[in-house]
Length: 424
Image 1: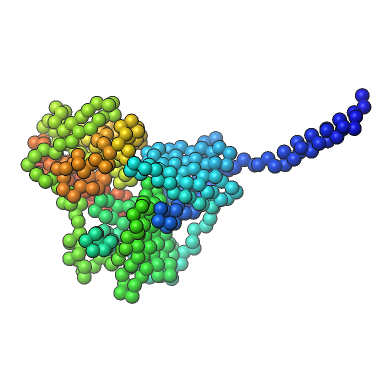
Image 2: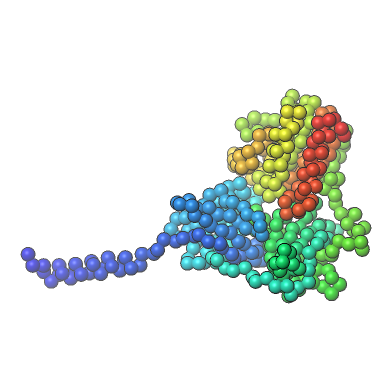
């Protein structure tokens, strides 16, 4: 049967429409590669970010990169052109849209009792700056004077720049860490160019940048941005040397900074364990036992470094009577939500000792009112068999501090051995 004119016209139109639809079909988005870009802090400051997406069959994985340090995501998914990278142990998520080799989105995480959203922009497979040896070498240990007047604080810092290591010129690239009494900032990376040192860190919790300009007297002057809603802080850095050894000696010591108001009374603590049961300092399980209490939080990067080491020591010494307890102070104060984060934290590090939800970070100082100068996470309290505090260590200096990390681990083990022997 012959088709009518209109039937032919409709058929041609249908074919043209189908071909048109096929021609605009987008190719599947592939997120694989190394992405480099910026995270925008509330101050407007841009912090460098780097992360790598990998594929293994149908599965995607992601790692945040800070110098040689890599932080694996808990899950990665792709829906169309929208990438979602989840860090459940920090209650944080990167959600971004990919267009070719460009990515735009937000990193969202819980902070205190509010949600903190930071804009992220990145490009794929962007080369790192070429190294050069045109700058003087800042490698070494430094004092940082942070803030002004009564609010000024003394911190340590370690920088690595310039020179040659193993025959490879490092030059423009710069690395290091900053070490307040509360513990180190982890590995920082950036550039030492045109007389200005810029170091960045974005790790899913912290979004920090320090920018310091060289002065004729050899000091460095600039500011740092902590990535929250505080104003930037002025900073002056000077090398540690014989000339400033008195200043170094006056700096807060993590071994003595936090202490008991009354060392002759027992350290009182309480919380809810992972099974929902109340636990307190005067329970029978702690009587005549040496106890290590870690004041911690799932949101705290230094706590994620201390916990695996405490777990190792617990396994080594539990047969000799060692007891370890973690008091987790979380952000929201909502028991169900906070407890979920504590459980994720415990599972991530295969914790076998008691982990307690102790309340909100807002309530920590009131609940720990026996302590002077408490404020660092973690803070670790060593209690003897007599129930009295023998030692308190503020913060935790992790892998990024190099030799300080090695020394601290040895000191922690020595403290535990002394508790087990009954030494003060």
